[in-house]
Length: 386
Ligand SMILES: [Zn+2]
Image 1 (tube, rainbow, N blue to C red):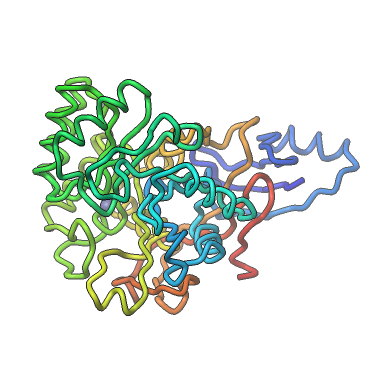
Image 2 (image 1 turned 120 degrees about the vertical axis):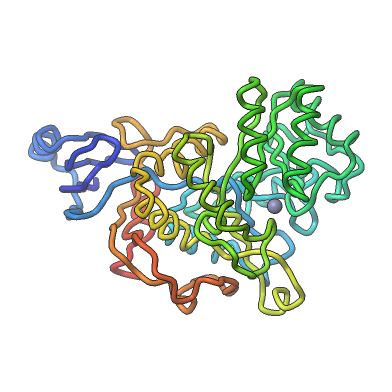
């Protein structure tokens, strides 16, 4: 058992104790924890958490695992370590692997390889075979393994193909995660398609004010559309580092923050995209994000008076529903938890654990450190021991 003492629990708005037994949050509240611990002979490990915040662990709606095919950018093991360090216990892995995750065999291969990890990998299928934007995958057959499909990395250019995919998502109940490029133009086109044929559509890494406005309007019409924002689009503007969609203007990034405040944003997705130095030199778009996402988001929240619970919703509770998981510091929930500090800190490239180091944020001042990551009741990462 794990006895977490004196943790600030934002969801309960108080400092309290939590007892984790097996893989569950067993008791919350000093009195009930004390009385249980007194009466048991089971081994109890204590964590003094004074000054730390206890949150449900993060779930990434947008992650590039890079396997199969690109282990030279990141291995399964490295992804696991990086996610634990970042406080992420679950990720939705995009389908732009080699081979593409466009058939049950590839999805199954990833799930099998990810099984020994602390990290829970939810593998998305692609929308079209080989990400070529032409022939749809066998959705029904693949739905035994996944109910999320995405051609992320590429736009589905052909409107007829997208329309058919959306109609299928309506019929079968799966979700399409869309990489819209050029962003606002494609967001608007795809909303029109949803109006026409229905469907469940999620917009990845939204970065522009005009895109948000279009999506909010579509939501108000009752369409099944959602969107995520990334740490880098919230955190930066006017930065020339290559990422897709590009880092936007100050007005755009300020509007994304405003959109969080107004409750428009559904999820934070990291778009964690490891690349080798060589690939980066050749122009590969992407930032390695998973280890730093919390510190970046916490800084944005702190500076803009966005409370802990809003952040918890965006990074944990809501994205968890995409993969049918329940998150929150509540008795009976699975003990997927993190303890974080709220200290100022500096991002250092040399401290990244994955072999790829593609970040523009070396030396950036940020806020908050993941001190411990607990997966199903076991400590999977401990900053003190790291
Ligand atoms: Zn994308």
